[in-house]
Image (cartoon, rainbow, N blue to C red; front, side, top):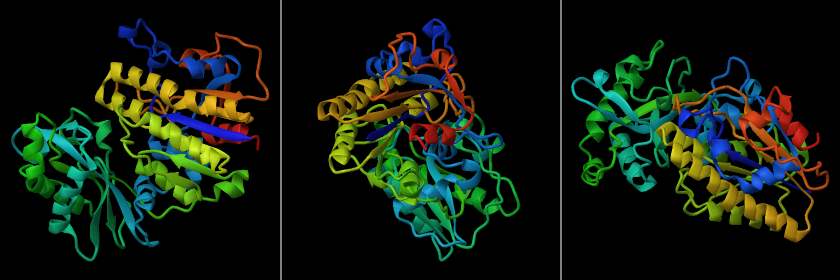
Length: 403
């Protein structure tokens, strides 16, 4: 038996007037996933527990079978694991975005314009992170380059008792309304302010501005947490697996759970990722003896954060056609029994351009147990609302793996 969990990050949405009251999942042409839905099970699942922020950290832990209220110690420690940072028990990791601020005047009066600095390349970002390290790194603090705009700061013997805001939650808003809060948080605020002076005239940003691109002109620090400790995925489900994602967070969850993690050349976490390469990597993992692939695709979420409706629909269609279709065709041609779960980790409604804790639709298909075909069963919010409801992602994972 082969298992696939395919996660179109942030795919869930709300009814949109420009789409005649439909959601992007309804508007997109999703041939393969809707074929599976017509002979499978659809429903809704609440991936975010009550009282937990609707971040991709909690949501993906949940979908992978882990209760976030038990296992979540913060987003950045999971990303640190992916980068290869060996954290001590007293270290604190912080997610460090390099973002775009616009406007004039004091730092507090600038506007948070782009949480990803126009999807800056990792090569450009590394130059900026090295410039930041030259200023701030010492025996207590160090910055590490991640992927694109997503990076990491480690503070030895640090505290987690700060109120820090994800930049994608406050796009178009004033910096001064969302600066760090909590006892001792001034050092974070001061680094963010000083980083603006370091980065705004950096050659990388001068070049980006000359090319009409958003500059990565400040650090934005958030997502703090201590070293995580996940139980073994194999001990939990008796299945050997691999995660495939362009995002350090997902790679970190995989590493901490004892799963393999595969890097795919050209995988960017955006609309323009290497979809075909991800599908090919999954098929190689199955051929090499893996039972399970956790396929994470960040593009729909990034399009939502940018307010790009057409891009979100295009990304969903590419995932269906270029990722899901070839994997399902491989299963069928190889004569494999297989189960597929397609589920967003959370909603990212275009109207708000950030995450929502509302339930998301899912599809479960089992090649051994096809239901009578019903083309009204589809992968979208309206169809899912008529099906079985799971009150947690980890309950859905247990169901999917027949635990």
